[in-house]
Length: 244
Image 1 (cartoon, rainbow, N blue to C red):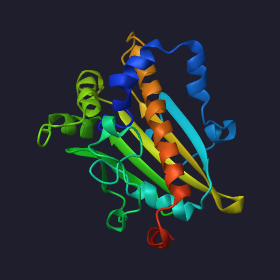
Image 2 (cartoon, rainbow, N blue to C red):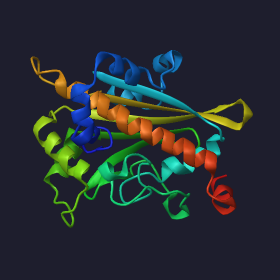
Image 3 (cartoon, rainbow, N blue to C red):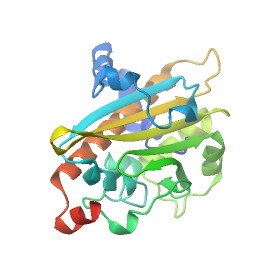
């Protein structure tokens, strides 16, 4: 999958950890940040992969209004502000600690990069409310066929490329939705949902799916807390004025 923050998270150190996680730990990571009502509620982008066989919903409360959270989402991406996650696995350098005005222009049809050769496509965008990214087998195949710029991909991305080359099915598709909901007291509920059609043939061992699920948790937990911490901390008067 071209969206390596999601699929690539199932390889490297996250994949190894997923192979040994026990039943008690699985219960913990499958329920972290999950509100039953949010899990059952419809979100923007659900229709993009209507026949998903893997759905992962997470939520986190941020002590800042949606207008202060949104700029951090808009500027995400490899070679942009980063993913606010485990940087050594999904990008070069470190994720931004401030809002970058030059990266605040994003529109439907744009690409949010996950590596030098491509990334997710923006399918829905409603400022301060919803951002939906999408990837499928066609764009994944294009990414796998493309050379790696200067040949120095981070280890996590290089490993995920090998994983995808062997495991991505022809009918693979995934959506990644970010929903911002205003709460009382100037707070925000950030809900993220990954819906994936893995296209796994019958009889295929379940281990890759389990690794994928744990990898999604490892990367998105760090990413969501990274967004929360940055939005709550702010980034100076100038950046916060721009965000509003």
